[in-house]
Amino acid sequence: MNRELVSDNDWKQKYRDSLLEMEAGERRWRQIEQALRRLVGRLCAAGMGVDPQLDDELVALAAANRRNADASELELLAASLTSAVVAVDAVSPVPMAGAAAGMRWQSTSTAAAKVLQHLRSVGIQDAVCEELIALLSRVGSDAELARILERMAELISAHGEALARERLQAAAVLADVTKRLEEMAGFLTESGDEARSRFADTASVNDTVMSQVRELTAEVHSATELRVLQSTVCARLETVSRQVLDFRSREESRLMEHTGRAERMRARIADLERETQDLHSKLDKEKHGARLDPLTRLANRKSFDERFAQEVLRRSQDDQCVTLLLWDLDNFKFINDTYGHRAGDRVLQSVANCFMSGLRAEDFVARIGGEEFVVLLTGLPFERAARIADELRVGVSALRFHFRGTPVKVTVSCGLTELRPGDAGGAAFDRADAALYRAKNAGKNLCIAA
Image 1 (cartoon, one colour):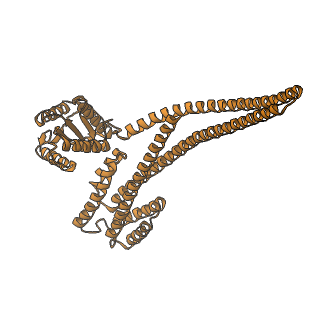
Image 2 (cartoon, helix red, strand yellow):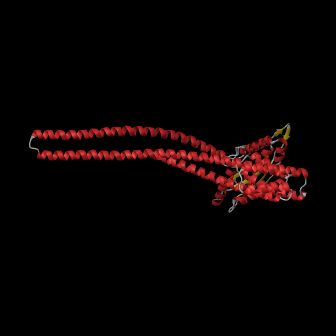
Image 3 (cartoon, helix red, strand yellow):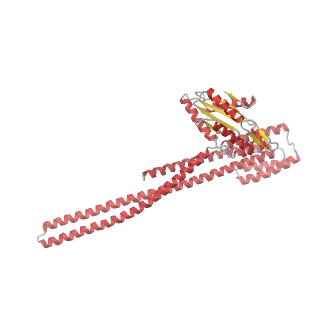
């Protein structure tokens, strides 16, 4: 019984941890929402003065944004703003100097792109984020930028709703676990009450018997006739016998009641064990799935951050070699734009499989962005790690793709560095990123060490 209670208490703690994690996720998304609201406010301020009609729409949107209006009101205002922007563009195609407009769109697009990069890093609709990032690079009007920001807001709103649903589900599971624990606590309480009742009943019978024995002893000593003594003994023995029989009857009733309750509890525990196994399996699958990239089935950015932090800590404690390989597909945007996202997805999956087949079981590989991958090699001298990186690069360049009847060459570039004593994780990653940048500028399809 104690084992089941401990197991259910562990469950309760796990669900509380899950609830806390989801609450932290909600807080992060509220922070992103606040950042987006600040971004909207700044955009409204930046757009003032272009046209009186547009100014009215911007003032209304900024006011709604300041009072934290809900999504439906903001969508109506955004639609009205879009119409006003389109009208202004139709009347005055160049409302401000080209250089000034380009600078305004560039700064705003850069801020929006950072938000999208964060959304993509936590696994929110990678393909949509990639599409919006590509659109941001080609923004040419306020209307286009407004439409992109609307889609970003929809992404965040949808994810927030999903987090809220998960939190409600976790709360429901926690409530169910609490109910089950209360059932077991009730059973134990009833068992304790029954034990106390049995003890009191036993003590009462014992007192009655001893009282009859004492009275019988006194009467035996005072009796003067055998017939009277015989009658007295029989009466006393009959009283004792009746008390014992009544006690046995109550004990049998208690035993039957306890047996029935114990059988029901055993059946309930068996059900709980089956449900426990099912939920453990489901939680394991969800936990595993939350750390996998859905397209390539490699580890995702969250898994990489956790593993990399472990390797940095381990490197600070011993002398085991750890090499970081940062990869980026060459000309991947051209493949996506020319042959479509399905072709790009096939390339990503094939490259992921190529990396997996070329690494050891103890090595780590993850997809951390749209066309970015990372590999961690442990326990190998840097020279050997560099050879493995080049072998992986050659393996990718040997892949063959045909899209729309045209052969397509796919290559990757790599920046690699060894974790050094006293290294912070960010420093090592920055070195690898700088080396990757040099590989791109040197002609691509290269591995460069830092």
